[in-house]
Length: 410
Image (tube, rainbow, N blue to C red; front, side, top):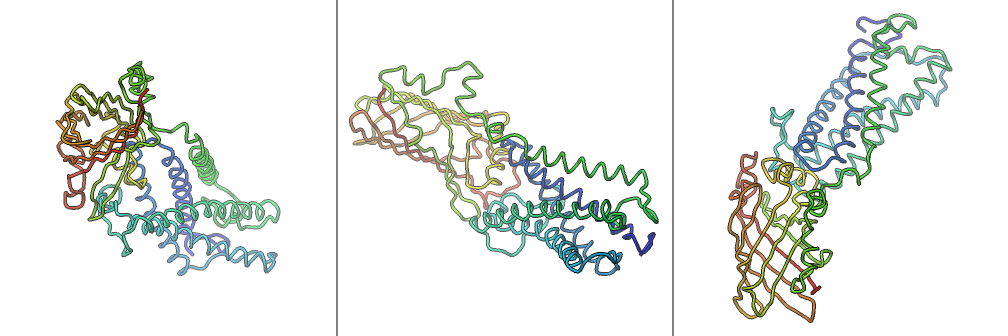
């Protein structure tokens, strides 16, 4: 061993030990925190940094394993019982398994996620890294995501056991087990000032990561809905305006859907906006007098995976931090056949307005109506995905918009 005696680990081993411990605690705390963030560019950037630091942990852990196999470690105290020695060695190797396994599973998860074709894996946004040779499948990615999270929490549990054992050795047994890995130690039991500072930083980091990660329930971090935006701005929600007009239709939101359909790496993806509000005034016998006004909460977009949802909210796509809503308005509605209509209107999205034609069918049974419609947009006409690190081959610009609206007379 270098720069040490037979009771302490080498400087390299101790440095790796504490550096990896710090990164793991920061990764767990940061992972918990970013899951509770609103969808935004900041959340997307945090996800990319989480991936990068995870790969750093993987690399450092592999090097630490190599170092461990090449260099002897301090002997365990003679007073330890056989079962204690077995538990100590088991915990030791379990840590290696988790330090390598958790980031490796994360890498496998990224590789299995079809979104990876649109969001390349880059170390700290600079160095491109390859995906691992696994099938690209959303179901597999979800399974790996669950395993990644489970083993991350298992690491925290093992860490608690590890700390308890180290304190037991130091306080109760009075041996050199804790001293052997403490930063800044010299021969005997002396701790340098640097050692205590480092220990304090590690302890505060562990506490802070846990508190930050676990603080704030889901209610504290929900995206702004159309109703909330209207309330803050002093506007009247569209549904209330519709209800005040006896000729209007009141949309049954739980029974209605607003979906978007796109292709990613050759696979069709169907997403939906979970929050939208609408004013619909339409007489099926005189559609030319009708009007449609739909407000769409872009933050409510759900494309099936957290990575995909995060990508949609960044500035190159919806830019929902600056433009949280889209709006479709039409006062030009005409019949094209029996129960068939088309609404010629304007879609405002990401600060851009474009004419949009929406064909739809309408069936009325008493005071209840059901409408189905679909149209196709070019996302690049609205600057959606423009400048993003994605090719039109991987994510073609054509996007389908499909509606299923159920409504009743007020």
